[in-house]
Image (cartoon, rainbow, N blue to C red):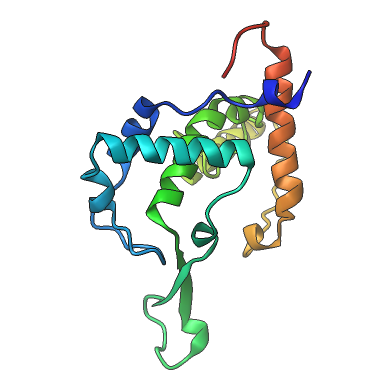
Length: 191
């Protein structure tokens, strides 16, 4: 199987239009200064241009350099001393077009990746939450109690876990999932 057969088909103008409709207005802008409102008001030719840009990014596996830069803003944590540097949380503001591009990719890969994750994985997944996990744990403990079993639990706080992840290894794992998905499909069917 060659590399091009494992890639997604090109983005359509309809996908880009649907993505633009999901952009929230009034949000902070990235380093390029393009606001969500500007993107919402683009005409058909500009939307076609964006679609071509996104497809070129997929084909070349490169994004515009400005998308790799962020505007970092320090926000004071609630109830913290404004004189202490530890009281601030840095927020990286990405370019709105880059966030739109990410959203289109996420829409494509979410169903593929979601099917391969453990049902116990709740973080950053739709229709799952911490409350649901607490309910599951409570039910597990109650079921064990009714069967005269002892239940143990270990809680690990992975502070700044995302910052310590090997991002290349993570991307490799996601690419492997997508390739496996494509290999399991019937010929002629694409995601």
